Image (cartoon, rainbow, N blue to C red; front, side, top):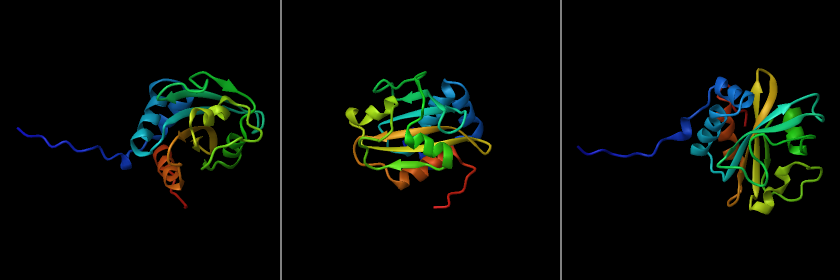
Length: 168
């Protein structure tokens, strides 16, 4: 018997709202599942699921729920910081994704993520994660080579927010 091996079409892969909420609420398989679903559809070198514990945008605490493929630059599961970096504050306040095509010295950034360029990361996307109408976290993806772009951002958003119709 001959079998034809075809690559999996991840372009239609989506995460259920329950999986995304589980990923933010509790570290473990759900958070890794979100990153693995993204890995099949979006080109990135390092990613994390972040949880936002808020007392208002500026005073939120950001906690890493999962990292893929492993911890990097001191950023791994359980690492937390406050205040959030400017990009995280913008995602929390606007509820919209954030794309930085060329990472550099980010003014006002104090988290361990500010060190990612020193580890070869050149671009970044934050995609907000929702519980109803509230932003409860974000998936952050980094690329070392070719910069991440709008296409990758839209694909990532479609995967982690399948109920949202893109307006772009």
